[in-house]
Length: 116
Image (cartoon, rainbow, N blue to C red; front, side, top):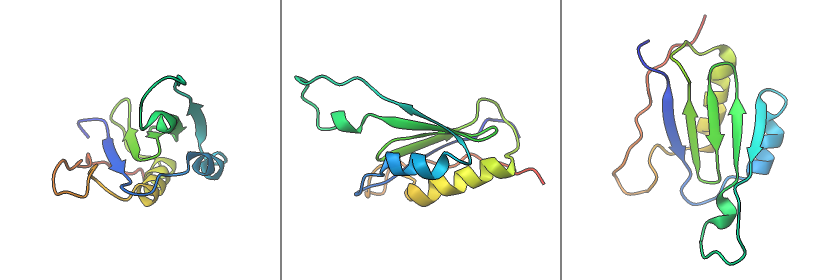
């Protein structure tokens, strides 16, 4: 295991409900909500999509927003069963490995091992 795990996943059409995801994951993982500032005079199509969840298992942390999930480890380590389960749940919600339906900008998944 030479490098920490890092992988980005996406949703293309339908925004993920991060409040619902927080409820579902809160019992099994550490879940924090990060609220980003907004301004009433700001002109942005995505100003209401800035909030995100920070979900942590043992060595794996996932930053989840409406359309993107970023999973990473601070340092290279084997996944625990809990890490592997969080990875799988994130992959079920964010089903795409690129930000667009067009065939470019793939996000390859870093290799990982799971503890036995």
